[in-house]
Image 1 (tube, rainbow, N blue to C red):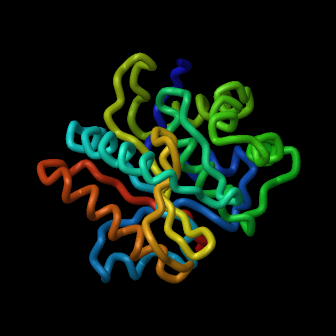
Image 2 (image 1 turned 90 degrees about the vertical axis):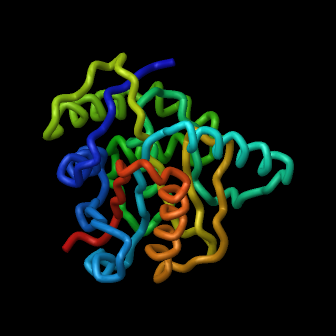
Length: 228
């Protein structure tokens, strides 16, 4: 399996990445500083996606395996219009979270001929598995990711160093809240939501992640929101 350098959870770095990928500058990544109402009030609206970074602890891996088995047994179908992709590249979770956030919001314009637009045109009619493999073979994404991964405030770790944190995205689609995680076999639907409620409903799911790992403090929340 191919390995990329991990991305830093830094809005400045991620916004530079979105720009290089060809995403409209009318939208950018912002920090979400906490789950209190006072702090959530500072998040620009309408929020298009909440991106969550968390440690892949033993508690998380145990829950993921149990959740996967339960959902496989239910054989749930998801809308074909929901853009979901599997992860087949180590440390590509940051890129995949951004792709999930952007491509599930068609009002976010992509520059014609850009890396993201070319990927969208090639991937939109493919399966989640085909989309994931396509990303790993996309030289535009690979080269852009490498440049950005080296521009963080902290030195990029060795490419073979194990990374314990993982990015996922939450989006609103057809009245439902979806958790999109390329390491999972399918999207996870978390009930009803709306563009206005997306922030609070996604935060509620993040709190469940945090509660499963009470000894952990290494959680980060970011939002894809209108540029202020």
